[in-house]
Amino acid sequence: MILIRLLFTSCMTKIGFITIVLGLLTISSASAQRPDTLTLLSLFEYIRTTHPVLKQADLLSQTAHQELRLAKGSFDPSLDLHFNRKDLWNYKENWSPATYFESWQHFFKIPNRIGDIKFGFERYNGLNVNPENFTPPQGLAYVEIDIPLARGLLTDPRRIAVQQAKIFIQQNEAERQKVINKLLFQITKDYLAWNESYRKNLIQRQAYNLTNDRLRFVKDRVIAGDLAPIDSVEAVTELQKRSLSLKESEMNLRNATQVLSVHLWDGEGRPVEIAENIIPENITIPNIRPNISLLDSLQSLAQQGHPELLKLKAKQRILELDKKLYRQELLPRLDFDFKPFFLPATDDKKIKLDPNYASTTYWSQNYKIGFNFYMPIFLRKERAKFEKAQIKILENKYEITYTQRELLTDIFTYYNEVITYFDLINIQQKNVSLNKQLLDAEIERFRNGESSLFLINSRERSYLSEQEKFIELQIKYRKSFAAAIHAAGRPTDR
Image 1 (cartoon, helix red, strand yellow):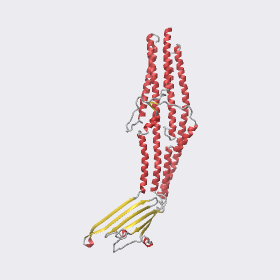
Image 2 (cartoon, one colour):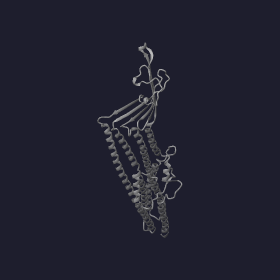
Image 3 (spheres, rainbow, N blue to C red):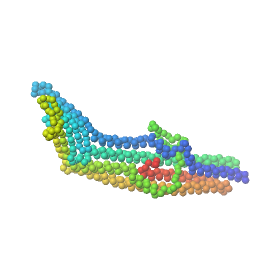
Image 4 (tube, rainbow, N blue to C red):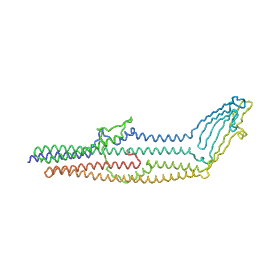
């Protein structure tokens, strides 16, 4: 009996040593940085140049710049050329061939912020020319100036479109940042889920190996007659439980790896899978508890530059410009048109024209002037547009106010989770240590013949469960911290 006790004590000492090593390995399983370790920051750097969503986000900025170009196109100068000629038999002169009319109209138009300017030339000749379009045989050169005196004087759709397009660039930039922030936050969550699955799988694998070694030891002792056969049943039952847990953890790890692989692409846009030899980095928690200054800084950042708020504020400026335009439409349309003519000199002896452009008499006799007035009697359409613009501005103000409150509440909620998980991690770390002490004590009692294999397995399961809870709390802390940064409108890679 003394020999049996010595052998059993030696073996149980070995089991206790393996269990202690298990605890040390699972708590700091990824502490040693290896060349095949995939860190979160390195993952961010990789996806910045390969992820299709980020490339798609860059297109938002390009689209906005094209909208600005489109709006500025309303101010592009234009060249307009027209030539028309009609030849038909003249029945008044025995159906002889005749030119009814021939017209040349060419002008160069320069749109301005207020009105337009045209530099043109026109010439009409033939048997049937409208007297209104009469020109000398050599034609007329002219400068035409169109100026709005009421509606369109302070602003017009062209100017409003350019201003709105510039704001649209800022709005799309905010949308681009929102898309980037959302993607980085999702990658962070998927990476942490992969990290959690990997570390739990490592615990379950080591626990399974330990239980398998213990089963072989128990079988040898049963064959030797040192232990009762029922102890081997206990060892097999525990191995089956560990096998189920290991299979489940392997499934979770494969799924988490596949989910994270969705974000990986090569330079040519082909999907990339995470290799089996790639492991996640170790999760580290700061020693200093976050304080209220973190909450204040995050809420301040959200109010100053959250993409959603920037979008709404840009929308507010666009709506204000619409209101400005519709206010102009309440005015009557009164346009002034002035068109001085330049008579080209000619050598035709029948005409013999040599205009003196410096003469006051010339300018007082060679021009065209006009006024156009238009105003609806009730202005119902114009007033409705203006009122709708005011309503939309008010709606957007309410949305800005609500969004600000919602963001601040989200930040506070995540901050509360951060400090709570920080405290729970410290408590759980003590629980892991205490359960380890209980397991060691149970092994010592078993060594002295005061315990059983069942109690050791029970203590060991509790110890492993506490280790997994410790990992879960670490992951929840990191997720809540990332969520707080995301709620502040900042990318989670900072």
